[in-house]
Image: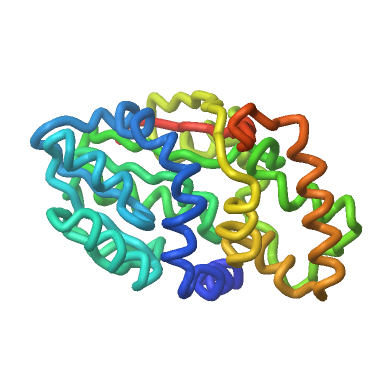
Length: 266
């Protein structure tokens, strides 16, 4: 386990409820394109990688697939098991999966490959559990982060909040472009293609602030939580200003999200 992997385990411990109530509503927009890219259909044996609250697993079950799911965090796995009781949900930390060789027709991972310390090593493990000609589909955020993903970070930057030395940056930052993501997946899989996913995410600003930034979901939330009350208030003011151009008549805001979807064949 790398230093980054150890940090990720600490980062997500106890965050399952906050993630389900907040950020999972954003990542859910990529689930159907992800399952389409993995070719998931009735009867397929599917692995949902980094299941979180089980949204991908639930989508695959609706398609009639036989679903297994894994997450590195025990609380996340329990949440997924509650939401997708027909799935075989286990705790597992990449790059080690508790499944036999060629166990699956498809592997789908929604915004999880960017949370591992050694992405290529993880990809080789995913290849192991896929049957010959099985399909892989993975999403990641486009980097550097923009749109809704960048809101809190941009607000902190405006206020001048420094990034702590002990909070590591994701090794995946260098792969968050279509060409780089495709090259990475192409080292292990064949017939690789990368699509850009963009959608408008509508939310209530105060709720998103509470369920994301102030709930310590993700590294931005961790860094923000370390600040004193006055600094947090200034970041909140900057956040509100950033969101003003995105206001819609309902009193909510609509902000674009930018992601990448890579898919390939074993």
